[in-house]
Image 1 (tube, rainbow, N blue to C red):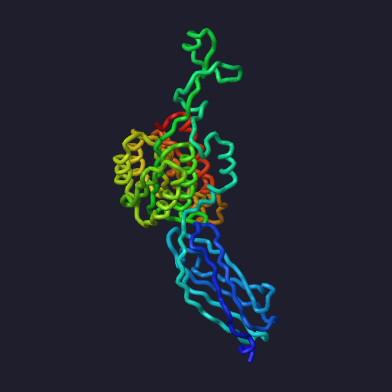
Image 2 (image 1 turned 60 degrees about the vertical axis):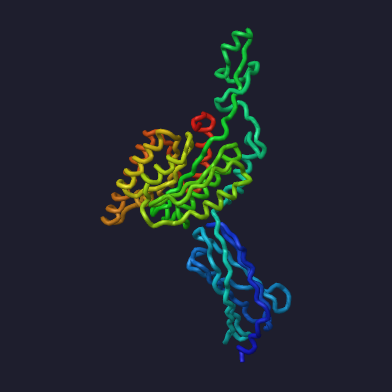
Length: 394
């Protein structure tokens, strides 16, 4: 009797986006019309989906009355775990009778796909937007004077100017002081190279390292395009995966986003020798190569260092890696028994090996960035702007 009093389902609608970004909450909303008593407990909903769209491949939440008779609505957030295309597979709705002794349940099969793109929330962040407002380069490409080393013009020296900008030969000819005005270099080639191998597939704070790297690279790529430079993406694992043509304008930024979404997760060791030699052969002029990678053992690190050493002979290289917070926690943890001491000693040995590899890269002339995943994007922008100011790329 209670099941009969629970009432029947009128309509059931699901509102889901076709696109979302990895690691960013994406709302799913359900609207249901149920002919039932208002005194009963609210209905519950569950949605099944591809595990790449969220943990455990399921989402549960309770619907609330809208104020209209028999109308209920509720929402829950998907948090995609990986890039690619996921599918919503099923929808369940369950509502009890007024006595709470029985319940009715309906199932709707879903065949809706959701595309998961790289996370671009740092590009939309207030910090970066404020930087663009204060920076000298904007939407319209123009000459930027005062930075770089490319000569642009002479101007009469005024108090407060940097004395190192005084052109003594021109000043001697004109019998008064003149200063050089330089133009910031443009049309540099920037290549973001991604190691898509096994170590970069390991999660850090809930998302694979490769996805953290892609987000940081896209932020820096957007800044580079704003600055008038050319940007390309290069992905590799045991063999090269893709290399995009150079993009020269922010209006084509979506091409980089689309290419980054195609970077695959590969549970194999990367082949640095093949990948970086392929990249070197395709680059016809000196470029800035930003390499995102990680390493867990000295053997793989040795092969990486040898390949980077050959690359740095012809190009400016920035090596970006995420700080291993897990090793730091194991090393600094207060030991309670001999097993904890052994773990701490092993973690400390790995941390020392890691520091040794990064030190070798620095001695080769590589700019090494090691930071937390949420800081590497801004650290990379600082390194790029520093290299641009010193005209170290061209």
